[in-house]
Image (cartoon, rainbow, N blue to C red; front, side):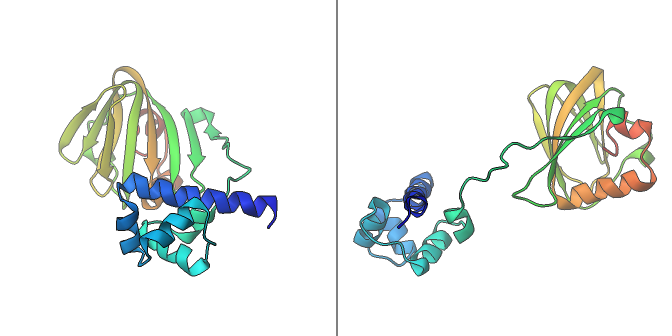
Length: 202
């Protein structure tokens, strides 16, 4: 066995034990879920038994993960540079492990729109945290005040918009695939300066 394979073997065994401990399961509990004997599982974790593919598949399923995640090694491209839209004060990062998802940092300077017609609705979910200042989240007929270090998560099928209160604020948002597509569609036909400043179609 090469040194690289030996390191992967050791890493997989450590992951199995770490995932078991994180679930709060004893050797006996995981062994029962994976249909293995307790002694077999102990030898797998301790490196005293060969790792067999069929056992890894079973263990991955029992640990609520995938075989790929169980055996993945560190990628070279760990650091991700943002795409910058300086005109609108936006930074956007893609999430490689979840294609279609993205993270966006935005400076919001204007209050939320008074006209409900300027609020957007589309499939998906969004999550945001306020990095500085105070944001106002308009969600349907409700108005939420989100302070620095507070977060909000909401379904984007409700008409929504984000604005600032008492001065500029900075927000970091995470968009799932559907929410990101919804904002891209907004941007293709209707994006204007208001969209960047009040967050209604970020």
